[in-house]
Image (tube, rainbow, N blue to C red; front, top):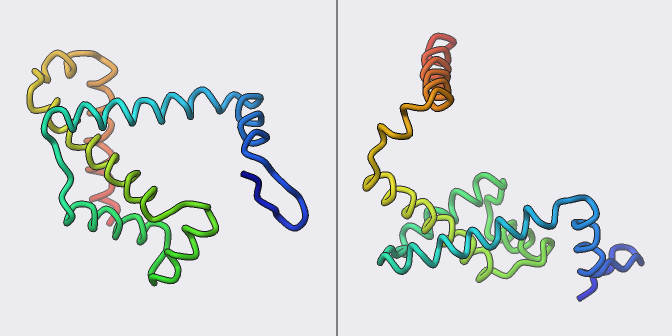
Length: 137
């Protein structure tokens, strides 16, 4: 599939080659594979995404991307070469990943992770930043 941009043709192969040359291909591929593995694991655990959750995620996505009208969303999808189904699948995967993380967190003894110095420092810094933002209001 090639897309013309003012008389210049760019192929998917050229984009993939660019990503490989710049070192971005492997991390991107790893992210896609990780997302698929995680979503599948969530489904195997019986985790599901409701229509309401998907709608809320779509609303947040539109707000973050300043897509206030239906026509804005349609134009964005078209300009990025993405179908509504692909976007919904992406959002559903995000929700499944979040639900799996929640399930893992509930089952895991947190003390093991909170005992490492780096984590303690991160939590400490987050607490401080939270406090500081309240002071600056």
